[in-house]
Length: 362
Image (tube, rainbow, N blue to C red; front, side):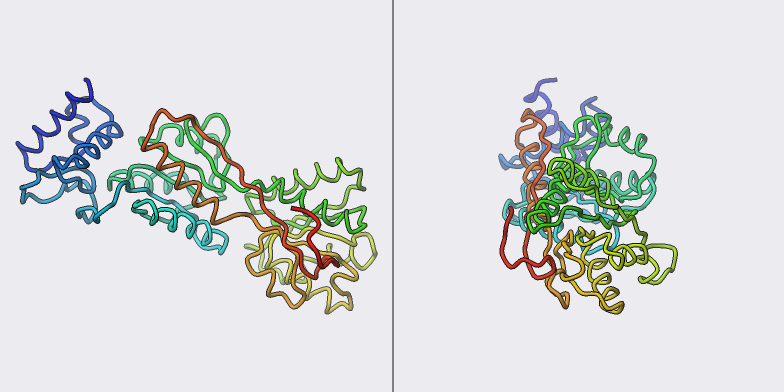
């Protein structure tokens, strides 16, 4: 069915029924819901019908909005698209990414519907189903870092009914037509290693959380930089901060012993909270930062607030959110545009904890 034929059929259905749902009409016409949403959007832009969440109503119709959508309501003036944003629960990291999405959406006249993802694949599928049923045009997905199994998750992502962008997540080839925007965490780790090496350290340790989805990337970037610069491979300490109830001292005991023995004199620590905790533990044991340990943290959410202000690698979180929203809008405006996978580089912010007071790398 040609576009003109589809749109005439939509107008006839709206005139006949007063209101329609995209889902029901797509089934009746044998056309995808994504295609019909685009048709409804075009017709609404021409002033031929009212676009509402999940469907459309006639311009003079007093019929209720489609029952498909939860809490249906007319779009705010100037609203162009509706985008669903799925984020993990808790964690200050995601707040800045969300802020980037929000600011970009406001500037582009896009409505954002936020929902919190669960840990299981079934929970995420249900969250997405509800968003799509509510009439969103695209998805921005920051899925739960513990989501398993990955193979099944990627297979599901490849079947989504609406365009989607992975945010601060990376997916393999099985994820199909997903677009991706993320911080280049491997580059960020290498940035820290290069900076510490430039201050005379020939061995740089890595301290990172086991449960972080970024740890593997940090480890890869750390190892690549060490090899490229001909440094002595430093130890890698993986710590857990959930579920074991262990005090901070116990979690960092192996790191502290390495500093006490002189084995470790420089380290990249992920994240700010752990780095600040480590500074306090070292001080309690009679050691100082940066004199006994030159330290760079990875995050820069609260690094500057440490008693010893921490040099930090700062992922471009707000920019990640803004780029993700921009990709979604580009895809909706021009479905034929090439698929994109964007990596944004973090920057180094030099403070007191590494023993330097000037920026040596960017």
